[in-house]
Length: 205
Image 1 (cartoon, rainbow, N blue to C red):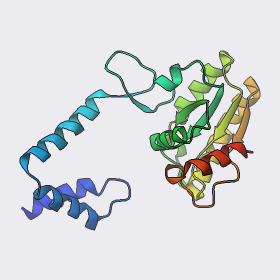
Image 2: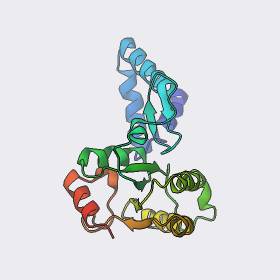
Image 3: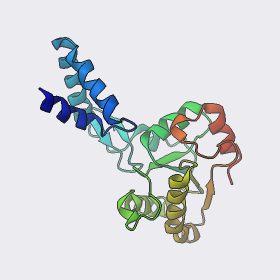
Image 4: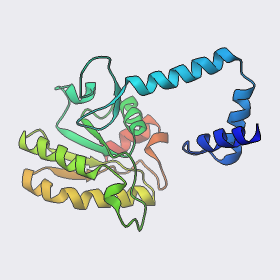
């Protein structure tokens, strides 16, 4: 029994922001639930993985029962030719809730830690460069907004991405900007309120 608890707690400890103590609380919570709850939980997790797709363009998760390879945002031709680069899918959700940004996105899928020796393995930089080439050739890009977290790792990620995309910016003549005033030091986009995001967008530099 103890071994099973430890194994499942180890699984939960891989969740963002979850330590060993909280992971074990999750295990004991599940032990106290009835079989119907456990069945529903496992069923929803399996369904989530089966129905989720990664957009061929922006690399974010989306859900569609058909054969579509791109998400609704990427397929929306009314969107502006501005691309916002973010670290996580949750950042896209939060920015969309603010209702200020009308462009498209690219999800890096992580951040580049400071002093990382192989930064290209931490984020989807190769996919990003391919996507920018495509947008550049189609003349569907006027600006890129680097919207990583305003903390050391986020700033390091933005700097790495900027150095990689600058040659394409010159080649296809698009602007590179960053979120401006409105986000305080240490801020993660995931937890920023809509008004803060609006101000950061309006004052981007």
